[in-house]
Image 1 (cartoon, rainbow, N blue to C red):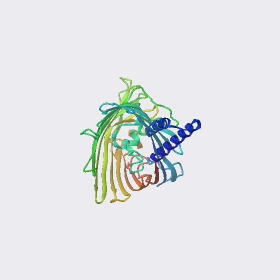
Image 2: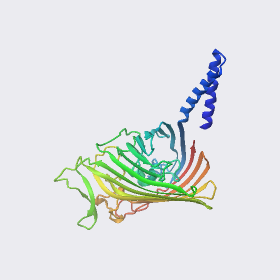
Image 3: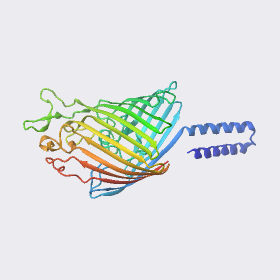
Image 4: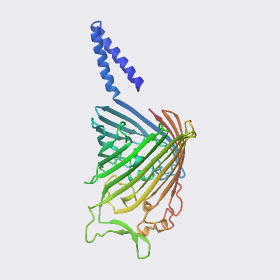
Length: 433
């Protein structure tokens, strides 16, 4: 980018000189004016940054038509595929404490807007910023960590289900300690969002109800010992809503007359629940510790979340369009943890990832029965990912990752009496500029 700007400056200067020579031989004054004009144009270009990446990958699944969250379900009769997982180009323009960001995502399947927002920072102490548009939801570390830098192919299962597409339309206030502050590394973000996520192909809906969701995050990340040690902690909260579309709200799990767990219908006789709102509540805690030593950089990173998720009978995923069926409230928890080891001072890296997502913590496996209104949406999943990354240079990364997914077994629920073969091998080449 720097070389391009220098070349452009020379061309602009040469062009200005040619125009001046068409009329008369330039004197020092006209030449200085030309140089000043070129510098102004170059200053404008310097404020614009362009970057992006392409993730081309091959995947192989244990079975044809595998359902998965490692890039989406496989088509019927397909157990291997080539695909562009992400193709990003990002434009960032900064001037006078104002930032404009536009990012597109392009794949063989669709083209969509990934980011489109503006940000203004106070010009005095530079602690406070206001940001509005399409942007990452400020919940947890997993969402904020760029897909280009992540050590595994995809974000955690709970992130993809609770906050699909990671981004949403909204506005937020940011309080962040500048580099000159003694508490540099402190950051507080609080905002209001539509709650539906970004517009996706075939679903052109920006909001589905009259409520707005609150999301907040506070964190502190810093380094010591000449950046040899990195550490940080954080906490997040999501306070949102889902509209009940009919008079069937199953608001809790309780013990029935047979001594079994069962979804219980809320009181819809003395009061009408249709059109009311139930709460979407998430709580998250995050942490990171990284140290450089003779064996290389060792990093441990993880998050734990819990809360309440409204959903349908067959889905625990946050809806991105208006719903029409019954509403089910589930208490959930989830976790992911990374152990990352860069081998000495080489370009090679080993990755171990462990995660789980339990969408309904109030019922155990053998009590999950369809007769008591439980489905696959109440099944717990765990996964162990083993990976290898090679950072060939600043522009190219090779990733090989094998994700071993395990579902909770329930002898009383059809389809989950055995382990579902849904392990995924991903081989990815990432090109970055």
